[in-house]
Image (tube, rainbow, N blue to C red; front, side, top):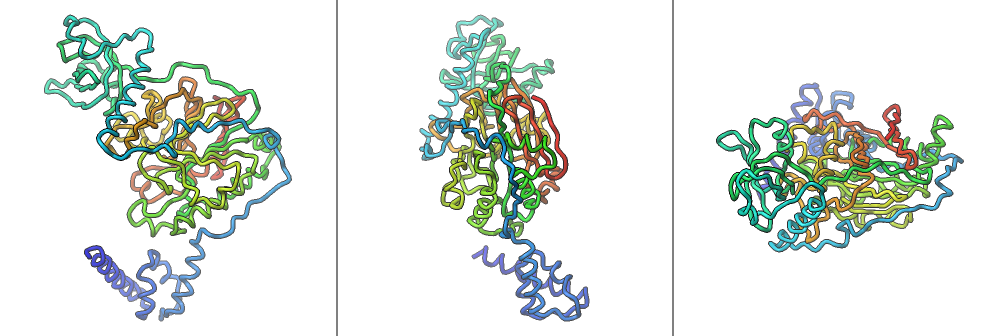
Length: 510
């Protein structure tokens, strides 16, 4: 009842604002016209476009029809075709979706205490196992430290339960393990070590080299992460490429449909040079890293910012666009927070009921977030990137303009989650699907609406940006997105090329 009363109050206020606005313009408006405009976000724009001193309901209806037509995202997709055929069309695909590493059709959590215990136990055991294989690191169980002499050097592994600054100004970390809990102290005098300790987050499983102070306290000398091993970047045998795009946001009024349609025409061979055509012809795979549509009810008052106000309509429009991608390109699409799946990680693949007009396409593969696909022998991890937000908030050295640095921090942890109970929710699955159980050759992500590329221990981290114009929220936050970007990576040379359909392109080596 309170919600109904509030809505009535808002509508009454809107009516008053409409009448007062017309008075300021010295225009007369009838009650029917006011009723037509009271639910329209852009009523001022509509009134201002009506000439004359009298605003009639007929004039308002005409303007509303034109306005809705302008905002509608259901217009026909027109993509330029060409007779061009590239090398990739005649090459058989070589990929394997590694379903064992994603939650799709494997979710079993009931939200019970045992699920949480299984979740954290699986996480701890896997990451503990990585530390146990590390040369020069010989961890002791917490319950065996009583036999170690004071100030003797010792190695331990634990999950971070709590962090605080002591009365003496030293950073203190409480660690947990199956054998009990332990306290690790970082001296305030060690600036370099404090910088490392500042990156430690709750629920991180870390290794510590230090000196025993008491049976339950250790003085930290070095902090270790599960991390990737140092590897040379792998190169492919075949001269083919994988392309990454993300955050299309179909259904939003800010969706850059013109630029996206230009991108689709480009994929179909409408390029400006023979060199570019040759590069397009090598594209055999495409990753779409989430937030494929804008969704409905994702945030308050979102309905006013949508050109397509129905979730099924948004996916129908998305399907029309996807069908314009050449059929020889294998597409792997994961969800994001705006898609029609649960917001909590790990996210299952988008259900077929929402993508009916592309579910019959043999080259379109719906995967979860995170998911893994082995492409031409390259183990590629695909994650929309929701946990990146918590990384930016929890650590001082990261920011959303450099998403690749947050990606590197997650690789160091061998874990895509960033603390249970922070901004991003997680489902306590009995098996932790957020763990990075393999050494990825590629880490594809999105979410931040900002491009970013980095090479880290043999893994190429790539974030493509978005196809949505700058939102009001981003303006308030001072975030400037990098829209209209599609990235192709040649698997034989590992050359990355940034194709900017908002203007320009840039090539980068590995």
